[in-house]
Length: 64
Image 1 (cartoon, helix red, strand yellow):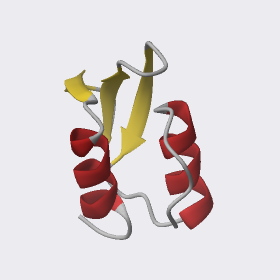
Image 2: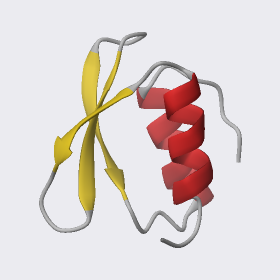
Image 3: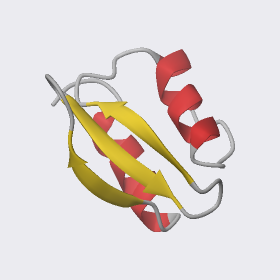
């Protein structure tokens, strides 16, 4: 795993987000109880903009 993935997953889990299932390719599907939506997380997230976008979908503040 490269880039922001490990830290991103840690932040999502602390916020109560749950892993739902594997998606296509190297993507995972997660659920946020804050926003009540499902969103994708790329295991190879290397862009801070993408990482912050995932946090926004989860209802969290920018961190990168």
